[in-house]
Amino acid sequence: MHNFTCIYTQRVCHSHITNKKYMSLHRESRTTLMATTVAFLLIFLIIPKSQSTSSIYIPDSDVDLLEFPLNLEFLEAEFFLFGALGYGLDKVAPNLTKGGPPPIGTKKANLDALTRDLILQFGWQEVGHLRAIQNTVKGFPRPLLNLSSSSFAKVMDAAFGRTLRPPFDPYANSINFLLASYLVPYVGLTGYVGANPKLKGATSKRLVAGLLGVESGQDAVIRALLYERAMTKVKPYGITVAEFTNQISNLRTQLGHGGLKDEGLVVLPILGAEGRVAGNVLAGDQYSLSYGRTPEEILRIVYGGNGDEHVAGGFYPKGANGHIARSYLAPIP
Image 1: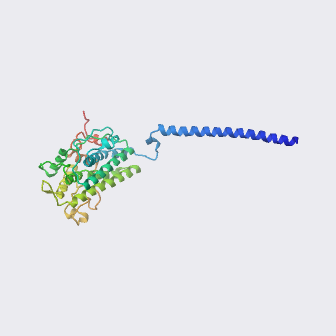
Image 2 (image 1 turned 45 degrees about the vertical axis):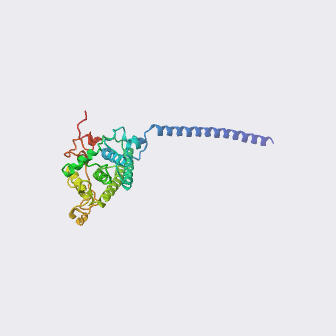
Image 3 (image 1 turned 120 degrees about the vertical axis):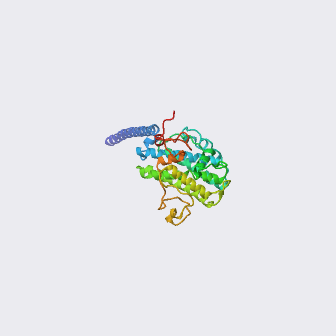
């Protein structure tokens, strides 16, 4: 009996000691887990997302090439949103403007239901483009944009080499707005084509490929709608839609100083696909591949004038923003 009591007492004592050790270890484990959790939360809250997300790597040489297109994306977003809604980024996504000045001369266009629906889709797509680029690189404030009727009228006058009477108004009707839209996405897509081979990072290439896909789609829709009306005369000028597109394309080629990289809706058969068709609903080189442009060529086009990337003007009265564009301009006093 005595032996049993001793053995029982030893087991109880050992069990008590073991339980105390277990409880102590359990408390230590919980303390360690809580400390680790707090540490991770602090790291997540303190370190910027751009630093904590190690999977996103943008080579320094890619940054300027990714930021430069913001200039055209801002222009497209404002033009399409205002055309369809009568208001733009300052109302739908003010954070994306980064405090840049509001555009000049924008207003709601007199569009038929189908055209308005399509242009509204384009507008929201451009908001997405701005967001995608700014989520990848820092970006810059929206540049001052002149999207007034007079700004577009000057482009059309330059395209025809004479003053159109009355002055061309992009907001007057659907045909005019589509012709004005013909000016925009195509320039952007040629810029993406030109930038792509210069990019080094996989993230950069993936972003540009995604942007190029949608910009090309927008241009295709615009060209298809205009091609359907190619022989329709634009009132009150008595000039066909096809001739408008040809003259605009000729002007962009002239201003860009980069050789033939632009074609209207109807061309000589030798310039059509495989040299066999005059219809040219999509522009392309001798292999029907998209033309590419450099940032310098794009600046020459959107600044208008004599096609000089050093002289601001046209749709960008104070010049485009970003390192590439600003490097060609004298500092603004």
